[in-house]
Structure formats: structure tokens, C-alpha cells
Length: 336
Image (tube, rainbow, N blue to C red; front, side, top):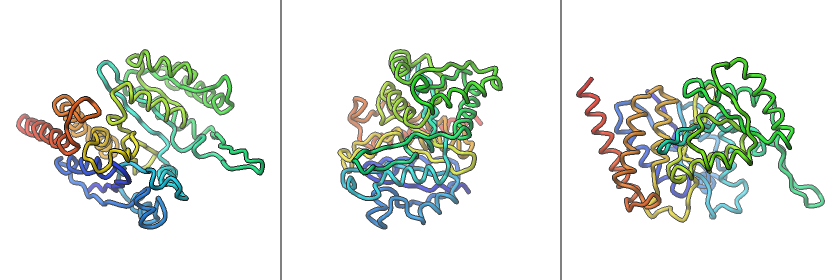
């Protein structure tokens, strides 16, 4: 039986996670679920955003489904809830964050390096009050995520754009050199390089022209949010964080949205799409993943939430997804 560690987290995290679990339970796929404290909720319970018991359970699971972390309530906590998020990524070594964007003619995936760069480099405060964060990359960190991006591009439309800031940053010059060294091994993939600032303009204006984009941690964070906004908002954007071994982490791109928490209006589409990514990448259930993706798309057309121009509640949207999913499963069984 597949085991999923569920970290509902903070803000709207528990609300959208509940809809994800409803969909997971409706599938003809046997799975065991354990819910664990994480983020601000874990700080309230244990004083730590990533308690040892939570990390241990995640290590032994086949996949981790994560809601969201953080909020004003913990702005002055030390450590903050976000430290738990960085910590679990590092501990599970999920170095490749896949952020797909689909909308009309747009069908792209941003592959964001997830356990290096500014978010994990040396940081501190000097005696004179200067604050610093260091961007660091080892060649092996770059090579493994770029290889994954090449393989992904090869399985799609065989186009890869590598994004850096090599005209300024030494880390980016290293990044570009590694990509160029690997390119001959993937002669069937068309590779191009772009500088992050000018590429942001191209992504905004010509989103439909891109296939797979690979970049470092901070650039990937920013560009994937831009892509999500183009596709209708972060309420729709899902992600899969993968390493060489299980478990992967599957989570919406959006934050905890504390202003929406408890009101029953949050859009759970990103969480439901994250469940679909989990089915695809953690459990090799591609057909079931497609049913979930299609059911979410159908619900967005028939029962949209407020952020996408409708009036449906979180639960009403989940109900619509379940109705569509049940119909697709029944049709599949009838034609099997």
C-alpha cells in the first residue's frame, strides 16, 4: 500500500489539503495517509516548524503532500515556519522543483533547482550592520538538475531554455558552462540560453512558445510565479519537488493566504493538481493523474471559485471535481 505523509500546514493549507484528500480517497488506488504538524502549526505544538517526528514520517513515506506554511502570527517566531519548508526540502534532497503551466496554447514546465543558491548559502549580519546572503552552487548540484530537465524536454517537445545571469554572476557562468558541457549528450534536444531579466519579458509576452525551462533557485521561484499569474493565478499552480529517491514533495505554489483562511473561499485547484502530479511522479499512475487534471479543468469551467471569476466555495469546487472524476472513472470502467 502506498503511504502519503500529509502536512496541511497553515492558513488555507488545511482547507485545500482536505479537498485533496477527498479526491485521493475517491480513486481506485489504495493509499495510507498520515497527517503531521508542520510550519506554524508545528511551532505552536512543539516550538519547531519541522519536528523530528514529522521528518521521520516523511522519510519513510512514498510521497509528501504539503499544504502551505506561514502567516503574520509567526512573523517574529524564531525559527519561522518557512525554515521548516527549506529544511524538509534539504533533508529529503528534492533538488528539482517541477512547476507546470498549462493554459490555452501555453504548455510549459519550469524546472527550478531547489536545494542550492541564495536560499541555502551562508548568511548573516556583520559587525557594521551589513546583512548578507550568499549564492553558492557546486557543479554537481547544477549537473543533476540540468540532466533531469534535459530528460524531461526529451519526453515532451525537445526544447530547453536555460536561464541565468551569466553576464554578471560567477554562479551563472558556472551554470551556463555545465549546460553547454551536457548539451552534446542530448543532441535531440534544442537548447538555448537566456538572461533572466530579458527572459522574464519573453515569458510574459510569448509564453506559448516555451517547452521546458531550467534555472537556479531564486530565478525559478520568481519566473514560475510569473508563469502562474499568466495562466490565471497562483491558485491554479501546482508543483512536484523530486530527488533521486522517494519521497517527493507535492504542493501548491501559492502561500498560506491568511486573509482567506477559515472563510471557505480558497481555490483548491492547485492542491488538486498537486495530487495529480503525485499520482504521476510518485506512484506511476499516469491515467489516474490525467483524470484528476481533466476533472479540475472541468470544474474551473463549470464551478469556478472567486479568484477566477466565479462564486463557488472551496467545498463546492471540490464537489464539482469529484462529480467529474466519478463520471470519468465510471466511463473508463465501462469501456475497459
